[in-house]
Length: 127
Image (tube, rainbow, N blue to C red; front, side, top):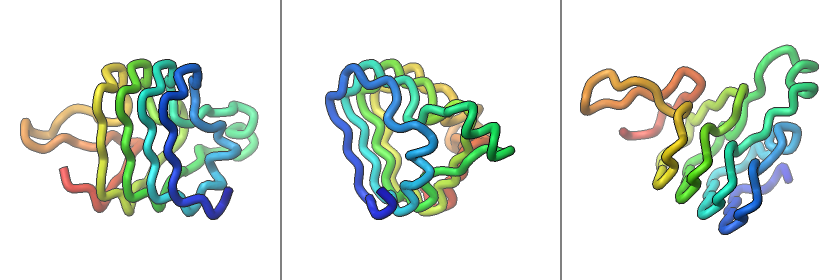
């Protein structure tokens, strides 16, 4: 899985989580992630408390991600419960019809400039 750079998941209506954290940490080359039409998905990464506890700190995922596409995920509430994301390479972000997503962004600095949340960094993203 370490060489996987494109992952597309579509119409997996019974899928609540895309990956457990112990598998997601191995996707170090992932550049494109598209998740579409998964009616039951609540989180992209399921946090296994035992794995996180042994590491002593939160894991970081998808540091090479260039495109994140989340579309028609009516039950999605967050990318992950406790993990940290640094999107240094993120250039394209598509969020469509994810009405329950509440932990990806936080309050706006101004009406024109949304602020990326404290657990998400995206240095290349133009907002």
